[in-house]
Amino acid sequence: MKNFIVNLATNQKVICLLFLLGGGLLSCGLRYEIIWDFVNYHYYNAWALVNHRVNDDVLMAGLNGFFNPLPDVPLYYLIKYFNDFPALISFLQGLWFGALMYVVFRLEFLFFDKNSLSGKIALGLCFLIALTGSATFLQIGISSNEVMLAFLQLSAFYILINEIFYKQSGKKSSFFLSGCLLGAAMGLKLTAVIYCFGCGVTLLCFSKKLKHPVQNLFWFALGGMLGFLCFSGFWMWKMWTEFQNPFFPFANAVFESPFLPIGNFFDRNFTPQSWFDVLLWPIIISLSLYRQEGSEMFVADFRSLIVYLIFWYFIAKLVYIKIKHKKVNFDYKWVFLSLCLLVCYAVWMYFFSIVRYFILPEILCAFIIARALTSLKPSSFFGQALYFSFCGIVLFILLSTPYFSENWGRHLNLQNFENKNDAYIKVENVVIPDHALIKTYNYPTSALFAYWADKNPSVRGVNIFQQLYAFTQNNNITEKDYFSTNSLWQNKREQIIKNHQGPVLLLLATGFQKNSWKIDFPTIPDTKGMRCHLLVNNLLPFFSLCAPKEIADQVFVNDKYKIYEDDDTK
Image 1 (tube, rainbow, N blue to C red):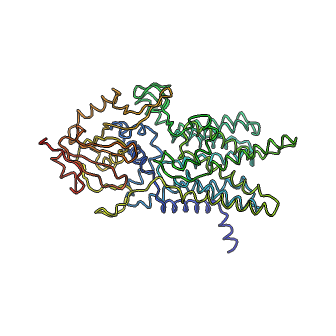
Image 2: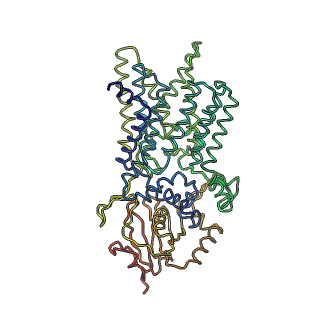
Image 3: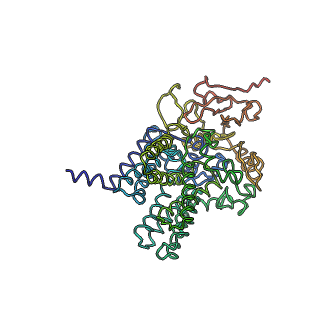
C-alpha cells in the first residue's frame, strides 16, 4: 500500500491532473474576468467567426473586431451551451492556469536541486512566487487568453532548457516542437511575438552550446513558422481578402490598406517616454500602484523592482570578481534564463508595457528571486537573523500581491433584480424583435449584440460612433472616431441602413471613466420618436437601449427602467 501511494504521488499524469483540478477550482472560486474586453470583442469575435458574419455587421467591435478570434472560440461555445452554469465555465477556463502551473512545477526541477535543503526551499518559494504574480494570478479563468499563451510559451522554454542543458541529444524534434509552440502562441495572438523574439535571440546566442546548431536553429524557425501559420493563416487570408492587409489593423505602413490610416498602430499609452524612464522602468512600474491600463486599478506587485535590484547586485559582483582577476564560473542554464528574461522584458517594455502580457517574464522572475533568497545567506549569526527577517518581509510583499491588488472585474451581482437565476451572460428586461437593426454608439457594446443575434440570427448591427480610438502616425497621437470619416466605412454603413427593412434600435454605452462619453439623448438624431431604457445585465451597468415608441412595449418587459422618451410635441 505504501509503495502504491508513493508511486501515485510521483506519477506525472496524476500530478498533472491535480494541477488541472486545482486551477479549475481556484478559477471557479475567484470568478475573475476582464469584463470590458470581454464585452468589447472577445465574445463578439468568436460569435462572428462561428456564425460566418465576420465584417458583415459594421465595426461592432471597432479595431479589436479584427483580431484573430480563434482563441476565443472555446469560451464562446461554453457560453452557448452552458450559459446557465457559470461555475462550470469558470472551472473549465481555469484549466489553462492549472496546466501553466504544472509546467512551472516541472521547470523548477531543472533549476533547483530537489535533494538539498536549500533546493527544496527554493522549489517551494519559486512556485509560490510564480503563482501569486499580478499578471498571472489576476488572469486566472478570464477571457484575455494570456494564461493559455503563457502555457504554450513556457512549455517551449521548458523543452529548450531540457534539451540544451540535460538531454543534449541534438534531436531536431525538440527544437521543432518548441518553435511550433511559440509560433502557435503568436498565431493566436500577435502580442506573443515578444516571447518568440526573446527565445529566438537567446537560442541564437547559445548556438555554440547546441549540437548541430545550424540544422536545429533551422528546425526551430521552421516550427515557429508552421505553428504561426497553422493558427493564424486562415485569418491572415481573411484579412487580406477583406482589407488587403494580412495583419490588419497592424502593419498598415507596409500594406497600406485604404480602410485605415497609412501608418502603424501602436498603443503608446503605457510605454516609457524617455531614456530616463527606460533605465528606471522596473522601479517606475513597481511603484506605479495605480495602473492606467486597468482604469486606475490598484496593483501592489514589486517583482520587477526586486529583480532589478538583484540584477545590479550580480553585475556589481561580477565586476568585483573580474577586478580581482578571479575566474567566473557560470551556470549556463541560469544565463539562458536571464538572457531570455532580459530580451523579452526589453521588447515588452518598448512595444507595450501592458501588465497582462507580462506572465512569462513574471514567472521567470520568480526563479531568479527564489535563487537569490536561498543563495545569499550570510555566515554570521547576526547576519543570518537580519537575512531571514528580510526574506520574511520580501515574501510577505510578494505573496500578498493578489490580496492587496484589485482584480480586473467580475460579473455584476443581479440579486436586486427580478430574476435571480445565475448565468454567465444575462440581460433581463428586453426582447429584440425579428429583423431588427441595432445601431451602436460608443464601446464596449458588441457582446450584447452578439448575445441577441445568437438567439435571433435575423438581427443586424452597425456601429455609428466609436469614441477614443488613438492612431499613432509619425509619432503624433490623435484621438477621433476615424471610422466615421473614412468613406469606405461610411458607404458600407449607409448601405446597410438604406437596405434595412425592419425596426431600428439603438444600443448606447455611456462609460464610467473620467473621460466618459456623456450621452445627451435629445442631441442624438436617431433618438427621435424613441423610448430608452437602462439595460438590466450582469456585464456592465451603463448600457441603454432605445426602441421606437410604437413597439417599445413589446421590446421592454419592465417600464421602471425607462430613462428617456422623445417628446414629439416639442
